[in-house]
Amino acid sequence: MRSFLNLKNLLFLIAPFSIFSCVNLKTVQGFSNTSSTGLQQFEEIHYTFLDHCQDRCFEIAVHEFQLERELECECGDFISADSVTQVIYSTLKGYLLGLGELAQNNLTTYRTNDLTGALTAQQLGPVSIDESVVGAFSALSNTLLRSTTDFYRRRKIASYIEQANDPLQVLLMKFEQIVQANLKGELQFKKERLYGNFIELKLNNTLESDFEKRKAGEDYYNALLEINRLEKMIDIYAKSLHEIADGHQVLYDKRDKLSLKDLAVDLMDYSSEIQVLYTEFNKLNQ
Amino acid sequence: MANLTSEQAKQLSDNFFVLSTALLDFRVANWDSLSKEDHQILSDARSKSLEFGEQILALATSLIMNEVAESLDTIHQVTSDIKGTIKNLKNIQKGLNIAAAILVLGIAVLEKDPGKIGESIKGMVGAWGEG
Image (cartoon, rainbow over all chains, first blue to last red; front, side, top):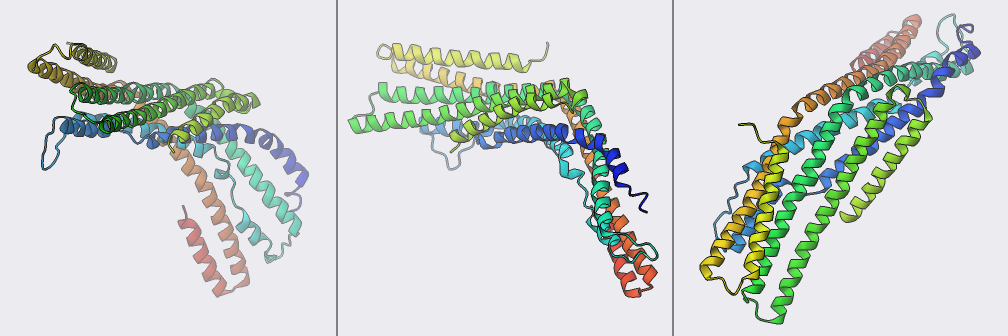
């Protein structure tokens, strides 16, 4: 038993695995987690194509003084647009979360407490085991196990990154297009409708007192500020998507050298940028 | 006729946007010279331009689906493979737990203690059922 548990031999065996097994996976995990957190800010924008359709329907009804028992809005195309957006978003989120989970360390930090408990029971018939050796065995076997599975994970992760990069770049680009060109584009229409409604109010001379005019002006600018806030959030979010795409490209370019420290440094830039954008976004969302 | 792409739909939407702003600007510039009927015609045309533009923009988003179908399939496949790998890794923990449970059962058998044997069998079944 003691010869099997020769500590020097075990240390020699696990050293190469343990040295380079942490940096890379942590880096991939860090980037994936930051990216999925950044991506999920989409849920904080709180403006969808359907919201836009309903707002528009409401604004038109108010402008034309249409009074209905129930306001009915034709929003089929907007619902479809939201569905497509959701499909792409969920796919991106699923991949980034999966990658982060696969790279996380505790996935292969196995608990050997039960085994240690059983060994220290000192009731293994004729075999007697020294307690300190049991502890060392437990620690080293855990590290060895983790190192070999880390090696397996690293290989798998590199392969997944390779397969995923091209479609991921396409999806991120299209998602950015949906959010920044299309969803923000709808806000441009909202702004234009708002401007038209208030300019009519002004030029029709329907507002008489200074108080009414100032109140209308205040309403206009408050509504405009709210749209501008949403636009800024979308811009920041779109930048985050860009950083995620660039960061994943770095992962792809260096997928065969995932253990190198410079990868950690390279990805740090993207992760930091995403975090800065995350903070900026949250400030607008307060 | 070739199908409309999302980019082309976006272009169309932009055109309707420009048209609607031009109609309003024209109306504002000639506000006092226009008759009530002229105002109504221009106002309706502008409203319709805005609505078309918004509708086409939503359509542009739906059209993206045709352009990303292949990418979506690939990412779905990779994500599913990742989940499979994670499951295998989690099964290693299960293997360790079972190994520990077997050891405990072995001790109980050596001790010829029926109570402990029963307990350890329960433990083994529990370890097997985990995860």
